[in-house]
Each structure stands twice: as C-alpha cells, then as structure tokens.
Image (cartoon, rainbow, N blue to C red; front, top):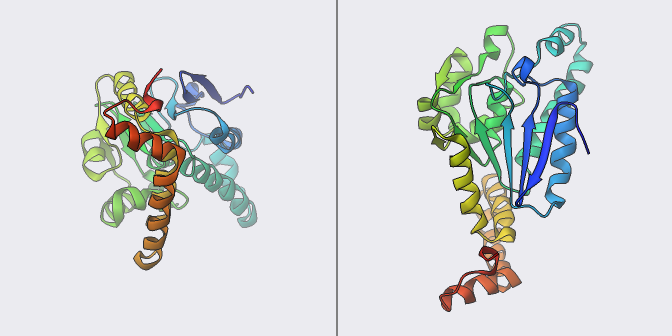
Length: 258
C-alpha cells in the first residue's frame, strides 16, 4: 500500500518507515497521523526483524504542522479531545509495536517529534541533532507525549524540560536517556543495531518487549508471577530449546544462519 506522507519499504528483514514531508520538516498533520496508525497497526504481522523510523530531508520531525495548528485554535473542546485521541493512538501503536523500533534522528526533533524519539526502543542521533519541548512557550502542554517522555527520561528531566521549553543538544539527549547513541555515520550505526538484533531470537525479542511493558506497568508483587511464567514458557518453546541446545553444543543458533 502506498501512502502520501510516509515512505514504507521492506528489505532484508527490515521495515523502513520514513516521514515524507521534508518541505515542512516532516511536521505531522491529520493525514500523517492516520497513515502512521495504519502502518504500525499492521507491522507486527510482517515477517521482519526490525523497524527503522526516520525523517526525509535535513530534519527528523518538527512536531505539529502549522496549518494543522491553525485549525486547532478554532476547535471546540470536544473537537480537541477527538484530535488528541488520534494523536495519542499514533504514539501508542508505535510504542506497542511488536518489532523493535530504531529511531534514526537527524537535525531537529521538536515537540511531538521528541515524542516519536521517546517511543523508539533504540534511538540514535547525529552529533548536530537538536531537541526541544516548546509547547509551554505556546501556552499549551506536551501532554499526549508525557507518558512516554517521563518513562524515558524520568520526572527530574521532564520537569526541567517541560517547564522551560528550552532547546537541548545531542549530548544532553544522550545524558538524560532520550537517545542511546550519538553517531557521525547514522546509517552505519543503525546497521550495527540491526545486525545485533538479527543475532537475537526473533520471538524472544517480541516477548522481551511484552516483558518490559508488563513489568514497568505493574507493582513488583504482580510483576513477579508474570516473569516466572515468561521464562518458563521461553525455556520450553521451540526457539528457546533451539537456542539453548545450540549454545551447549557450541553451535550457531538457527536464526543467525543464512
């Protein structure tokens, strides 16, 4: 299926999803949000190992499109609730994507664009990348992205950045945990991560994402039974048996061959 605001390509077990509105710095509008929801809702059914989320042109994502924002000013409260619900759905489906999502971040990531970085499992940015949560400067809030931002950088950094709306650089993004790596060669760094993921058992990777989500959202007393069941199920699974037996025999696991 072709999209107007996204480029979706698949090769060598990797799905590349590119924000394709470079003329507006990949700012999102209603159409991009709807298309992103559609892509990520179906991506788990693909026989792929990873997703790369990227932006076309010099910048990753400038957040909300100005034309879209101009309509928001005239929206009623109910219209704003509907609009924000769609935006929240986009972040949720990316965050809950069964496949690992690698963010390739170049140039500017502003407002909602920072939220996209936060929902990536692994985020790699260029040394000159710039970030900002400027909503407060406009009298609004980074509300929809806040669950993912706080989960990623914690309350202390969220307080500093949400309240001031200040811009920050790649070094600070790395220090606070928003990104995991700064690279001069973004494509090479992304390829390194993809290579690592391809040596990991594909079903185990998907189950790891479920494990992290469950443990992070439950109290310890509720999380522990889940973890016991999770490892027991993995040990007796076909993939788990193949992996452990290959290790004990000093052989390569089947998913690393080919």
